[in-house]
Length: 347
Image (cartoon, rainbow, N blue to C red; front, side, top):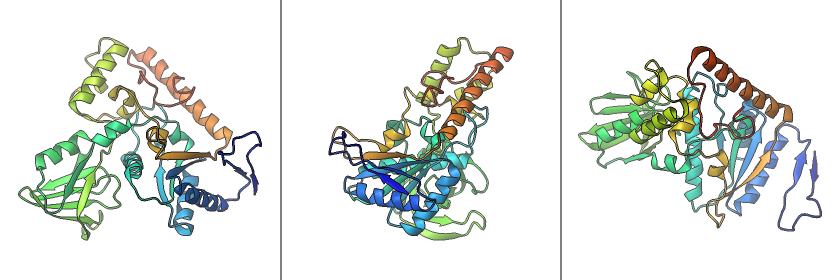
């Protein structure tokens, strides 16, 4: 392993170093040391790994060898760019939880080593605007009064699926005064015990045995999708869709589903039409305001062929969308601001 010092022409304030040739395992130690150094500046270290397998390995190594370092993992979608299927709900929930955690870090006064782990695919994809996600929350505390209708409305608008038994992230169930739900950011689902409109207790429970275990004093709910199906978002989608593709056909299932406030498989790829603009992952981990009180230190660890293959895949998917549209006379795919950053975004 070698460490190269900065070039002599760089200003003295820049303390960047290029590390290469580090064996697996050693890179986790280097990341932990760098995160501790950045703690003095109240900065977050951003590490872009080669793939999800490497992210998982680094996360396990850091948890064992550097338990003092707070780690957030931001995964990529498990589907191809501009595909006709949606990413798995568990992955979307983890992405939303990671973005919410980054916003919480921004507002914390306490300093500690912080590290964001992600991949090339995830880092190049645009995400829900920061301001929109900050407003999309619902909190409750034991002993306080809860508007049950308002909470159930929040769950419906923000992608939660009503089921008989809660087992997967993003599901909820109601049985009288008992509400089970599995929000992002929690390792286990939660069971809310209500007496009228008063929240008497919150417990986590095993999704397999359904037995409760730990008590909680409060909870914070976040969306389980990266877009919202509220009135404002639906109106923006409808307007943008008509502007891009003209008169909407009566048999357009996507337009019909969104207009009715229902989920439709593959609609996640139309994220740009639900918002006026999209942010990037680095808007969440980057500077906050002119003072730079919350900033990131980006380090890339990826092979050029990996990024090239992802770019090629995005281009092929976008071309396939357009060919499908020509043959069948349907809309080719999301317009407006591209979903992916870089030259491959528009293909």
